[in-house]
Amino acid sequence: MDSSIGYLAAKYKSISAVEGGGTGLIGLPGIAIDIPALVGMNLRAIGEYATYCGFDVAKQHERLFLMNVLGFASSSTDSAKQVAMAQLVKIAKEVAQKRTWKEIERHAFVAAIKKIAQALGIRLTKAKLAQIIPAAGAIVGAGFNGYYTAKVCDAAYHLYRERFLATKYGPDIIQGDSSPSADEPS
Image 1: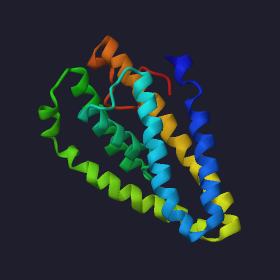
Image 2: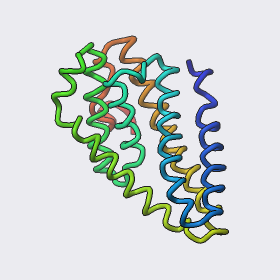
Image 3: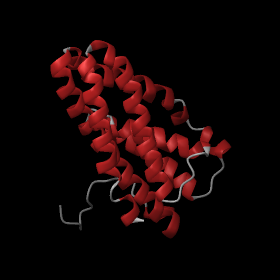
């Protein structure tokens, strides 16, 4: 599995940087093209990580997890990352315990998907505003897209590997708290 997913981050960072640079050349109209393309490309990247780790993204609970990975990667504050991580851990544990979609759907975090999508759109638009200057926009667009995609790929890599291990060894392997314990070195 590791050899299969080892190249994904480089692949998607390169593609997104080229796409961001190209749409950045256009200036302001390019933002309308760039943001949906960036989100779509990153969703595809996360989906590819999921597939290589043995998860079917056609299933509803996998799509929920995928959107939460995107929300986690694009969270700007530590508290927002902690909330997103708590949701991801909860989903991963329930999926590893073979819960049905109906059971998973009952949780309030399913409604959070809409909030993730709205917040993501706002965050990306704010980050892309420097792209409105046509020539400089190419540099900003390429740089931001590469940076953002690197964050998404890193999150997907670690979260899906953890889920793979949880599926293989049981849901108790997933840690709810990412801080080191008292007997672990910091």
